[in-house]
Amino acid sequence: MRGRFIAIEGLDRSGKSTQCDRLVAHLTETTGNKTHLFKFPDRSTPMGQIINQYLTSGVALSDQAIHLLFSANRWERIEDIKALLEKGENVVLDRYYISGIVYTQAKGLERQWCTNPDLGLPVPDITLFLTVSPEVASQRGAYGEERYEKIAFQKRVAALFHEVAQRNCITVDASGTEEEVANAINQCVETVQIGEALDKFSGL
Ligand code: TMP
Ligand code: MG
Image (cartoon, rainbow, N blue to C red; front, side, top):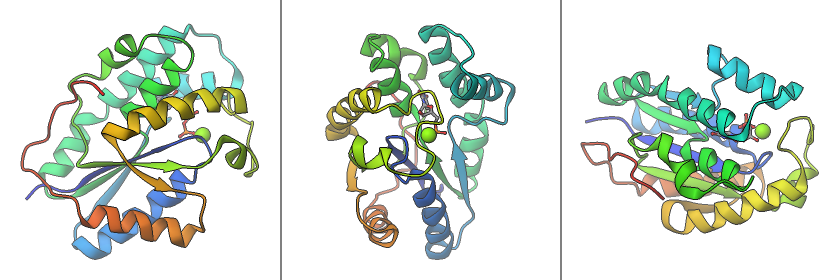
């Protein structure tokens, strides 16, 4: 049987990275199979390095160009992800195409335009959306260091995330303790049905 394929989405400083690490450990233990974490953007690739410069040092790129780079950065890792899943290993994603779409749409670009480059990517078995208010997130350590970590922008992203999550995600309240959030995530993950074939992303 193929591995489990799980994505975690949320605002900046919603605790995604911590929870992804915990979920990797949980899946390794409960399924007995290797579990891999992929983080998007993957800043280690040549495209990821341009994305990193854009996010951290204000390199100028048009909204369209950076959007396509974020999408290309997913496409450049997808064959590796599929191969692991086919071997029966699990894959956890720290952000995926929903982030890609809502962060760019929050800049004013059209939903359909934002969706197009990601069409055809494999759809996760479950996408968890960690909710935390932009105000609470902004109190967390090192907030404001990266380009999009501004409350007004995060509020626009949050509104789009909430709308999209109704149809595409399971929402998890991420304002509790690390332990409480991890328990909620583990419960959601246990109920997931794993189909043989991966669906192809056809829109939100
Ligand atoms: P990170 O904080 O998870 O490393 O992501 C860096 C920033 O990039 C974060 O503000 C979300 C944003 N982002 C996009 O705008 N488009 C995308 O496709 C992805 C994956 C992230
Ligand atoms: Mg961030």
